[in-house]
Amino acid sequence: VRYFRIFYYLEDDTISINEPEIENSGMVHGTYLSRQQLPNPDGMDPSEKYHWTALNIGKNLSVYGRVLRIYNTSDATRKFLESEGMVVPAPEEPPADPYIKSRTALDNPQALHQTKTDFDELRQFLTLDRKVLRFHCTWDDPSVAGARLKATVHYYLVDDTVEVREVHTANNGRDPFPILQRRQRVPRNHRDTPLDFAATVFEISPAEVKEYVSPSDFAIGSEVCIYGRLFLVYDMDDFTKDFYRQNFGVTEFTPIDVSERPRPKPQPDIPPYTGIGSPEDSYLSCVSINPTAPAGQKSLLQLLKYDNAILRYESHLDHTRHPDDVGRKFILSIRLADNFVSIFEPPIQNSGIQGGTILSFQRVQQPQCNPDQPEYLSPRDFFVGGSIEIHKRLYHITGCDRFVLTHMEAHPGDYEPTAFEATRALFADK
Image (cartoon, rainbow, N blue to C red; front, top):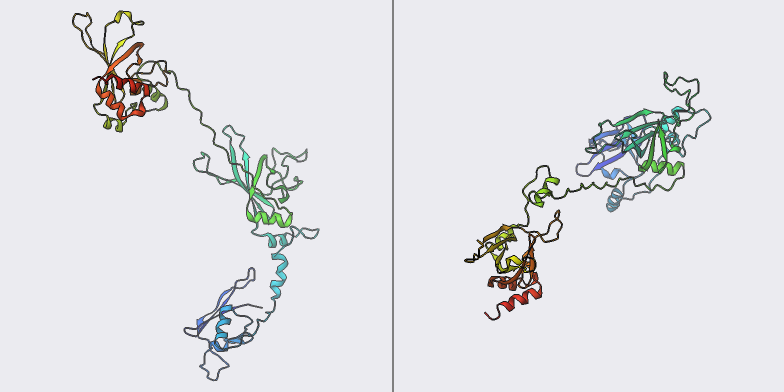
């Protein structure tokens, strides 16, 4: 019994016939009749062609001597015929194909290896050909450069052979060989051989193997030994899950998370500051092979905003710590563009001290700060009535210019309230 699909084209009254493919039928299927106008041998005129009014369920279609029985139609065709006033009968039951019926038990097996006592290899081939169980596994490489590697284990049901394929990732540094073990039957215990077997000379044959690995050995969370390597099964594909659900009654297939957490990178210890150069320069030499000049506290926005802006303060040395410097006065200047500090001593006639620049513009570290991670003086450290230590010399600030008050009024949040009030009181009577 052969089955066909008939297509009628209303635009030109042509007919094409197609035969669906049936697996393992031994016949060529596909186009049975190319699109053409089909002669109607039952017509009044020998040149009469088939018209759609002559097609309906229960009628025969003569195709050049072969008669096709129409037993059903599509919903769209049924609606069209009924809209044209034709009565469409109920679908007929087509006769069953004896060949397809005989193959039903082979194409849809209910259980694995339900055969007679003598195993039928031909039946296994016909039943399980092209059916492969796929397991996602991991195994630990015992070599010196070992790691936890991923592999895919294929179990071919047609002949109970096993193939292991290594899963490669980008830049893993391993040779790109896909096959870790070629397709073969795997003994459950490859070392369980007779005592008189010369394993160093001969290969293991089926005569020495007692048991082979079978699908019952694989399950999510189980370990399977394949020639000394332990493979941990952490997941399987959908076909394999359906196979175990139908044949072993397994319903739980929760995969195991085997992803490795990234190891924290060890942070090298930064050597202490040697005193040569700046701390930032020494730090960059430790963290970079090709160090660049340290950016420091400079920023383009700060340079453009405070170009040529300098805060100047009048000060003197602490009398208790520096009794020999009584009477000396100094001008402390801090440049807002980069927080560089300078010290200038106005020359006093007949004082015996030359005066001039004591400290050129440079960054000055905070007293008692960590030299490896230094903190530098900023404008908020300078205010009237305060003291500041620069290179182990303590300066008491007694005055400032008016630009300091202007800057503090423009940025009140950068200074303490007491410093702001002391500076304002200095210019209250002026």
